[in-house]
Image 1 (cartoon, rainbow, N blue to C red):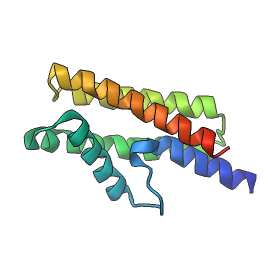
Image 2: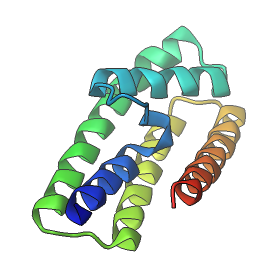
Image 3: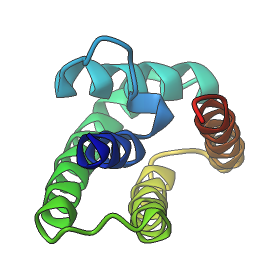
Length: 127
């Protein structure tokens, strides 16, 4: 029982609150939710959406592979998992900022902070 709870937590952390949906949504649905959230929060143009979609798709694949590897290696340290996830988010955000205007880059930083707060609040409520 405890092992399944830990694995579920790892998956949740890996995908982040932007990807998390009740009912076990598919990777494509989580990706679309992330794109929709960024589009709304940053007022992205269609051209920008077309440029960031492959970036987010690749980032999602890397996150899934990294988290799967960590599970296989038996890594359950929440701090290590969080640290790894934050590195991945920072990396994708750097890529996204090559497509964004400076003002959108500032909005992206604020959007990520809100995500962290929401995820922290949700994690505290589930304890």
